Image (cartoon, rainbow, N blue to C red; front, top):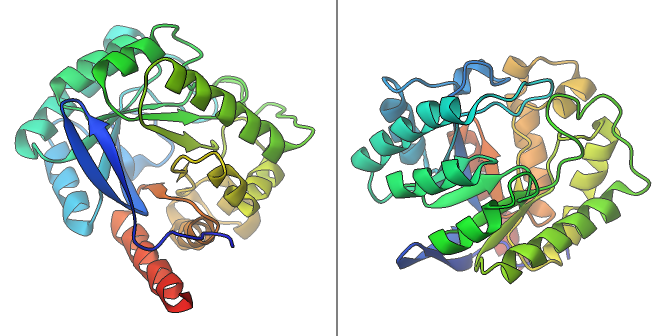
Amino acid sequence: MAGEGIPGKEVTWRVRDRLVRIPLPAVMGILNATPDSFHAPSRVTLNEVVERAERMLQEGATFLDIGGASSRPGSEEISLDAELERSIPIIQALHGKFPEALLSIDTTHARVAQEAVHAGASMINDITAGLWDEAMLPTVAALGVPYVIMHMQGAPRTMQDAPHYTDVVAEVTLFLSQRSNAAHAAGIADVIIDPGFGFGKDVDHNYALLAHVQRLTHLHAPVLVGLSRKRMINAVLGTSTSEALNGTTVLNTIALMNGASILRVHDVREAVECVKLVHAVRRDQK
């Protein structure tokens, strides 16, 4: 049955020198330390990040995901130093204010991952699944933190030019299986998989993946979905990014019913409400 086992599910992850119990499904709030992320209200500066993070935690976020380099379609790469300058002070500030909060660093660079964990991050979120930086997998293993691997066809600058698949669900599932195995083989204990909605996929590809999220659960790893305010919503509804909250909630609900475990979102309160309502439905079905 799609979504079987969602209510009351719990995982235990190694986070550096401790074991942390994570109730699932959970919500990850997005904090972008970038000037060009596609949803402008998610952009934060060092001066405002503590207040924004506090609100997300109060609303029920389990994780906060901090990124210093935009990966929106068409985005250009920035220097390693620029990414460090954007992200590390924010992680330090948040860890100092909320030492128990689970902070995730959204990066493709092993050095950024390492410095972020030393600054207080508890998780690494890598859109390249370790393929762009050969030091990433051994670095994550040595750091002893959970690792999110995502599927992406191409690179952010060009990934939406002409994405092509013979069978998008099968190809994404195979890729995530292979990269999950590579991560475990490198010594990473806890792996989370992300099908990468909008990363080298057209609207039809995205909806095919959403309809078959349950197939990803067969890889025996929590499934993270990032559907928040994305173009796949606006393409169907004729809305803009700023108008896409209701569509986001609908798709998050479908993802949870199909087995997703973590919602990565700009709007935490609405996502937490979504989780609670799906939980109530699943509880009643037992």
